[in-house]
Image (cartoon, rainbow, N blue to C red):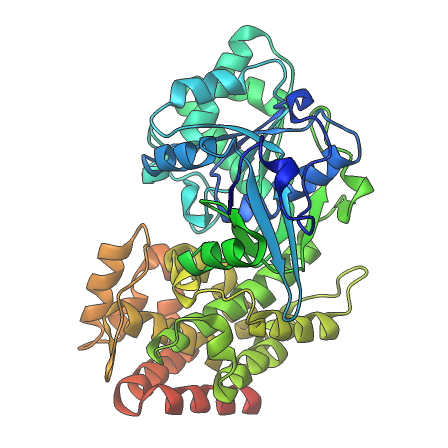
Length: 483
């Protein structure tokens, strides 16, 4: 057994890929807020490959605004900010140590993060703060009442860092969101300018002139790390890693090439640089992400803990395939270079991958941000077409029942959500009046006035409560096919 560290790299199993570059020469030119498994499976892995090719000007300095980030900082520091990335197919596993992460500024240290944003070597600030981390309303406008507009939020830290950068006379900067949001660059721009306007209108003007906010689409299924993952890595490769990352072989990154200054040579890798991310974004959000949400809550109500176990149930797989073919698929326009039929088939295989062992509970997190972003736009588009909405309505009804505590013998413990208390209150009230759940305007907008959607929701909610989850799924599939 070898504890992962810089000194131990030369002693690791020969099957493990290790950095072949001098990490001491890497420049921490990217500050990343929200270091978790996804960024370590995605952005950091790309930059590790950039460094492997001989370009050492693009290292990452991680940062966080939560108290939990102190634990993250300590975990990473104990192994010299190295970690093992395991790309698992059904019968294969590619294992390598990633060296592109150089440091992590702990939670409770916003001043250090802000100073780092103003440093002359910093060129990019990237974000994975989740869909719920942006102070934006349902229409994509800045929401000053949001808790994410407060002084301790990630966006506020970015704004204060930009103020220091402005005051120091430093050059332009790119703020790059890697979160699953429609127009994530536009959303980030609105959030940053909204917070900046309240702080200093002159600063907001400087940001408009000197800071770029590219839109991007990121894709790689990356579950939370488990003790079983650590044990597997130790037993198969002899590595003791406190926080390895397990992910799938598939990855995708589509990125607007509108940086304010220098950028990594991503065109050397499998990154698509484009002037318009929107077709790829709609494809991913309304197919992969929406299918995840349509799967998550019925699967939780059936008692499944893992996505691949749920997908092994023929009824759940039929539900996912039917959503992709009849509800999500028709609203996605043609995407340059993508065979959408093949993409939908690939999604089913990715969801079924037992080696990834993705958690249903992970998909259930932050439903108040995910459903309005992934599923409800599909409902609105299908509404204009008079197309099927039964599976989307089932997803919303299942979310409601899940928040209320489950059904039958299945008791659910709702996953974290910034609106969990309010959501749970409305979900419990829906036992007496199901329409009460749809009156959450912050989530559903005006959908409570759409009688067709309301009727589909009420029917799915009644079936879940009276007939059971499986009958509700069957009815949603039948209705979607007929519609």
